[in-house]
Image 1 (tube, each protein chain N blue to C red):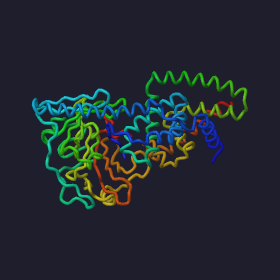
Image 2 (image 1 turned 45 degrees about the horizontal axis):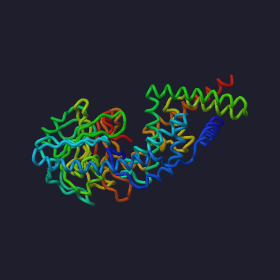
Image 3 (image 1 turned 60 degrees about the vertical axis):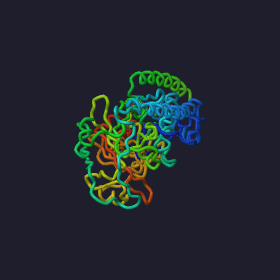
Amino acid sequence: MTIPVVEATVAPSLADMYRAESGRAATLAYLLTGDRHLAEDIVQDAFLRVGSRLRHVSPETFGPYLRKTVVNLARSHFRRSAVRRKHAGRIEQEHVLRQRAAEEGSTDDGTREELWRALQALPARQRETIVCRFYSDMSEAETAAALGISLGTVKSSTSRGLAALRAAMVGEEQ
Amino acid sequence: MDLLEREVRAMLKDKAAEMPQEYEPSTELLGRTSRRRTNKVMAVGIVSALVLLAGVTGVVAATRSSSHVQVQTPPPKPVVINHPKPKRPKSTPPSGAASYVVTRTGKIGSVTLGASTEADVRRALGAPANVQVANVGVSGYPQFRALGYECDKGSSSRQEADPIQAASNGTTCSTRYFVNTTNGRLVGFWTTSSTYSTDHGTQVGMTAAEAVQHEGQAVPTIGCDIGTMILGSRQTGPEVHIGIGTSATAHVKNIGEVAKGDPIGLFFC
């Protein structure tokens, strides 16, 4: 149910909900944004928003609602150019550090870092569907519901995302 | 599963392991939410005092500095007018025809989402019993004016139903029309009254099975819109929401609709 609520009393279980859901939510935000600090900010923000609506969100729908809010906030963060520039700087820094580590580490680690970079370079919709499908293990229908898009869009975005990752990895190898 | 898919899963698993699996709620989080409660209690006191003054002056203006909500009631109307309201059936479908039809094209009775103004709503329905200025508290969405009809005070059964009840000092309304303050257009609607029905005949109080039969679609059981039947898409036009729930004995609890794009974020999810 959509929650057209301005403000509501906060249920006392917010702290428990936070402990139970924050780890998964932060991981989801991290995989979507590639920035740990930004991910934690997003989760904090998401909890403030969802927490203020706890009265209207049942415990069983809290997790899905939180995850959808995280996805929406991650999207809106990317829309803001200032944040995007800051984020790009962080990503670049992290990338340089990770590349050095990868060069020194095993081939598997290097490949995964390249894959991670390629994932972050995907359009938001494709990245979201891939994270939902392959990290959260959601079905196509669940992904469609979580992202608010059609089943067909989930299928096409996932397929295009995987194709782009494949192309990026082949390019890297060449 | 092909090689790339396996690699993507492994990479995501690796990356996920970089994040802590559990966080402790920060004092900022708990502090901010508890401050909201405190502010709400304070605001209730302040607004109550102003309501008493309004009896003399006929004017009420209340502002809650720390929340997104301002309470306004246009003079010379009192804050709350108790309109006679129809009884809502508890377990049986409402009998009799609805007075207003909510269509998937954005018509609600004689007014139209995205086109009508507050003046049009007042012409069609009379002066609202309660008016509030608020926003949904999500960045990017503007303020709206919520015109309330069939209002009363202290009805706990309706508190959950009014989407902006928490901002209204205990006053709840069974029907709200939302006007975007940036352009003066009607952009949202919400009711728990059985005097409204969809163009396919669904009314508040009907069983979930009847609503499914009328509208020809199922009620989602997963995701953010769980328990809400959604007709149309706000991305391409008006979007109707029928709040039902997912229990075996669920009934239609509310009907809402937003204009294309949901300009005020009423159905933010």
